[in-house]
Image (cartoon, rainbow, N blue to C red):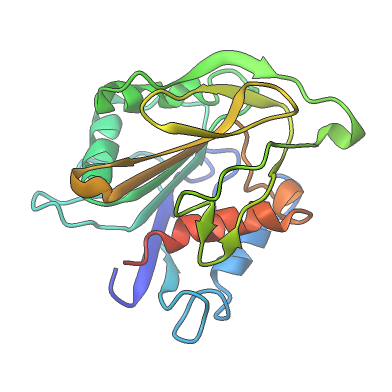
Length: 239
């Protein structure tokens, strides 16, 4: 908000891939470094807001994302990858955050409950979208494939960091989008890997959910489309 866009999310006790700049193939150092690069975010950057990485959290406390007057306490909640099911209080806070104009990112993956653990959010939103129990296995070179080319019709697939082409991914959890819009399928399948939706009055809040942690260094190191997608996502919080 204002001159900066503030980003929080789940920490390493809740997520096996938190937005903490960790290295390695399942780390986030490539994305974090890009978010903190003044050529990308800052007074003279592609986006005028600087990124402020707020402390990561184990749980979402009531009032931590949006106060009683519907003022955002952060701009983006990068929930990322977790196998822990959201509590009803956490789902309610995320819905209030979306309705007040916040940006939320969720990721699934192939391990037990990575994805379905977020389904209480969709229940609280009163929509039929769900993470499925089905996992699509990717074979081939190093287990990495390319998604379909998402249409350049959303603020995240066509944003300040450019239009987004096919996204690199590995074995992924199926998305079942209903109210949100399925944008890319994975691994030459008909199963959705990426979906997005606007929420709140006037569609001011924004939700992105994926079936694989497309923000891993494994993908952002080799595919500029993956990196730019998440730069566009955070840029959505600069209003």
